[in-house]
Length: 184
Image 1 (tube, rainbow, N blue to C red):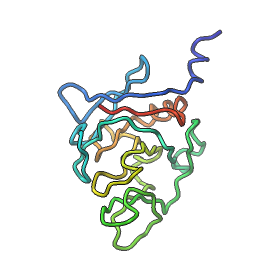
Image 2 (cartoon, rainbow, N blue to C red):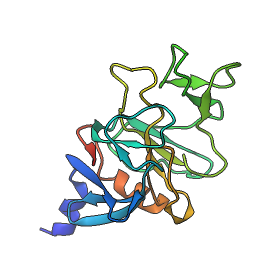
Image 3 (cartoon, rainbow, N blue to C red):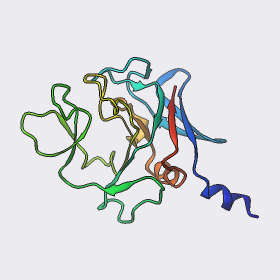
Image 4 (cartoon, one colour):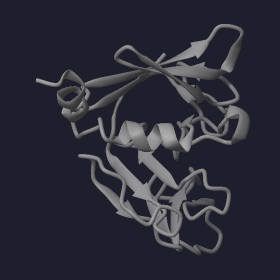
């Protein structure tokens, strides 16, 4: 049996993120024997996440599924995770005062702090919800923590984990409902 073919069909149980020595804003995603560079939050990996602290939360998180931008990726990326096409009015509430905090919302929502999921910069061309602060949701403990596309040069995120777009699309093939992301 061709080992590489059977390996490609196996869904991973866990992928791990470690900060690099000397730069807490950068890391490595460990996928079996593979090491993939990634960006972390400007505050590095934190044990007590707070809204706006720029930290990537330490812990083990389930991958809930996500979205892809259909005009930038006309073919839905292959994955066993639930993945839908992003719509222009998709948003994510990051206002801790609102009952919809850390949940998807439809934009515009006057007076609500919300992040647009349809972005011109390509960061959310592929985006996965890593299930941080989702059940139960604790207001002020951080919102919109995703696995998404990295900025050029792996510049820091607001608290997410970010990979090169090609690496993220390739990784999606190995992710499924039982896959967990361990940060720290």
